[in-house]
Image (cartoon, rainbow, N blue to C red):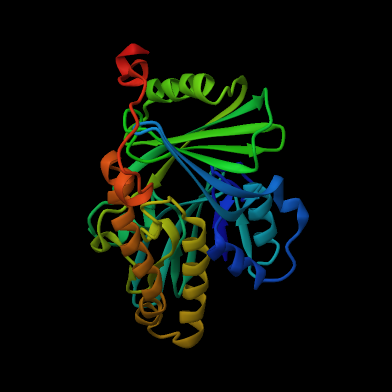
Length: 326
């Protein structure tokens, strides 16, 4: 059984960019429909550092997808009972397996299961009830869909500016819109407004705001924060803490950890958790590399030396040096 509070076809605040890891995974599942893609369908990366006045282009061909369409496409390939508009609130393990308590509309439900798989994201209730593992640091992502006044290049603009956040902001062409997003340690609407003003000045991006979205995202600091589960409870994706701390890529980890979970259940139906942890070892190694890059990209001087490989920073215009001037 697969259950979800929102009924699955929801408009998630996701950048909708699929890296090579996600692309390869989805290609192995079969034909990829054109309706999954936004325009332009493939995007390279343009890094812009407003602290040190550096730029860099990387040819990566990210898939520019429509997240709700991807969810529907994946859901149509599920071969299980689907319970929509149902919210989890607690579970109890006993000698007969797991008793899962759900709320569906105004009714309470109890479901008996052998295993409970938590795929409930960065604020996972299942994780919180499973153990007292260290809490993962969370950021709040803020996205705005702007009816664009201009057509951008076929690139994702990743903007580094530590006056706004210690993680990059993003500007993505999406059909007739420009998607502007940023992540903060708290819901910093003021800093997002500053980002929008800078985008108008620096990149000439302006237009009518059509939609705003907020959502938490995990940013682990240590492998110790990753939790695969306990007993007959298995955690996948961000519920387990599986996300790249440098790029914020969570989709590829959700896809691959979900697949690993299924593989582990097929291999060992008595004790799949240990097998699942073994299968996820490559994901942990990727995240460990992500910690190193996260340290580099969060520091302007390290970015300059290690990422942009510039000899010295350019003198950045003084009128952009501090936030108080906005």
